[in-house]
Length: 478
Image (cartoon, rainbow, N blue to C red; front, side):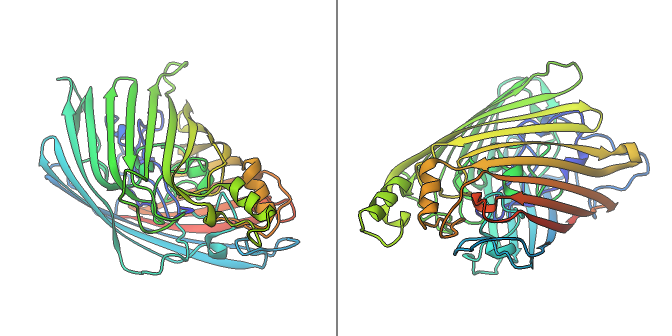
């Protein structure tokens, strides 16, 4: 995050009915992060495949066994030509021409212990690094990229969780199996409790249009709300508990999770009396237009961790106590960072969907786990390929504009650095990005994509850029 990598998931984005928005869809995470299918989307059966069309996985999946096995592989290559920059600091995006690659493979497994109790265990391997060592741009162009802080090349358990379903009604709805749930039908009203290791954006801040870096957009600030500094290790995962209450047209969710010991660090702090994250979200399914689904999610979070203060670091520098502002020297256990988000997705016509995100955090406390952003506005749309007889293709276009607080920008302007940004100086301007992708379904579970991004004021610095980052992606579903 700022992070790293999350995820790998089956292509629910394509299997899902275009006019049926997902409820509680999982989100993506950074540093190699991607997002799974929404838990809430299990309430809506997938669109039937065209007769004679290819399945969307290389191998068939069982729908009747108590066990579940699936997998994915995602490979991304990106590059850019030389772009203008008056100076480059330790965490600046390199202006010289360069290329970068990332690769993520994930094995998903699950077992139905009882009708209402499931065990889900996933194993992931992430290699390669993003452009410029995955620093220098708040909306970094590759969500699957791994920061150089990660030195191990061994696979790791990215999810290990129990899912407990508590029925609150006798009426049931069909459900679609995926990496976050195995049940083929669910009580229409229910409580779901999950305990273990997962990514918070598996459940919070998800969006059917922009959330999955394996088949949708690639930018950190488009697939996720970049102002949502959600608790996670460098790979994008944490340990915690999430409770969700489902009823028609409404989902309420709450989550408690562990914070990293240091900013964007691999080790998590298990002393929950001093460090933890509180997350709450309301998800509403109502539409002002009949037949055109609308989903609105309202998010709030509060993080407690050993975080620093931008203003204290600035004051120490101005008092001559440090040669440059150094936020690491101001860290204090139990310091609070809080924020809010709004997330809207709207089905417009058959196969055409739009989305918007808004995010804000207090901006005085150190950016801790995701990326360095304090305010964000994102909007975009996608369309499937049915008008040109390519049902399982999809094209998307999105724009984001990101900002940081006055304390944060002054800290960077005086020479301070964070885990993601720091050019030694700063001529502030909002960072803005435009991204277009086209994902083509080749055969069964094989997808090939082209992506291009244009970033203005990378790292909020008007003396740098713009930079254009084209790329390609090969995605396999097993």
